[in-house]
Length: 234
Image 1 (cartoon, rainbow, N blue to C red):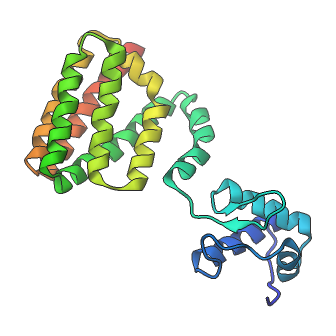
Image 2: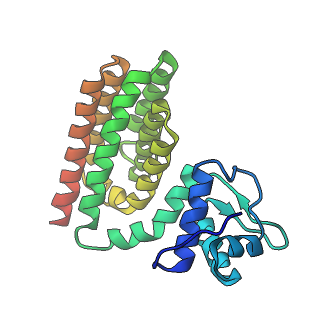
């Protein structure tokens, strides 16, 4: 391989960026072994420890798999790995005074888009699954813990209908990050009933194949639920 000139940033970050570029353009294919550390060090004009640091950074990003006694290999990141990499930062951000508000705003933007996609892509079996989720929702109105589980199931079914792996991963992550907020909100009297009513409106719009109505119903639903949380916090 021809030597490559690097800029003034941290060397290991530069090497990681160059290797990432080779993965992105297909020079290094998924599943294939990377060149040995000595070859990479020679290519980039750096030490082997610098290459090792770069590979460790790429491993944290889900782009490289490192095993003892075997060459590093190229991997493709899954939605789970992408979200996992964000989880630590998300938990710190949530602990800030504005964190819950900002995360709920993010969730609303994503869930509104999911509802729109679900209305565009739903089939008769999808509608039946949502109807079953709503029935379970209504059956659990007097049990906050069970209702919380059916609430998550309804939203997860919507994202499954939308059929986008990244939306699915991000939605599941947000559900996990906001779990305590969801529990706090559902503990208030009347919240479960209002949530179930909101789900019914979303279901009607999705079943009708009306993306604008589905998006509007989801936006109303989440605004209302956020309002209960804000009132409880106030």
